[in-house]
Every structure is written in structure tokens, then in C-alpha cells.
Length: 79
Image 1: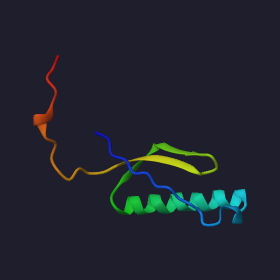
Image 2: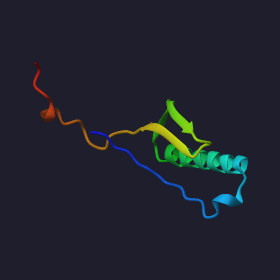
Image 3: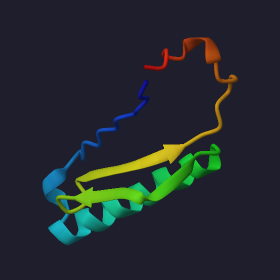
Image 4: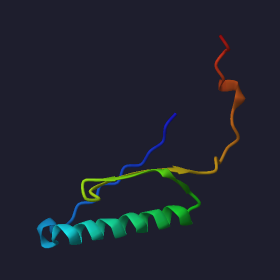
């Protein structure tokens, strides 16, 4: 099973910022999201962090502590 969250940021006035200012703004936004995730107890795998297209695309992998014990009754039979 896979769990993921997708966030889409839409700038109100995309043409208002220069390309470098927009890249800096999106970089600051990435850092703010990472800080909130860390504050919630998630741990980022820094090796899985990606940023492309002048920070318009960002992906990372976060681990968390399971809330429920692993259910061993859902194991596959061995071949």
C-alpha cells in the first residue's frame, strides 16, 4: 500500500515575480513545508528529495511512526 500527498501551489499573479524571485519564493515555500512536516513528527529521507523546473516541481519521501501494530494475518504464503 502506498500513501502520498500532492500539493499544488497556484500563484495569484505568476507574472508579478521575476523568474529568480519566483524560484526563491518556491524554495522558501519548500523549506516551510518541510519544517511543518518535521514538526508533525515526519522524518524526511534527504536522498529522495527532488526539485525540478526552477522549483516548480518538488518531491520528497517522508517516514512516520505507524499508529497501529503490523497485522501479520495479511502475509502472503511462501512459494
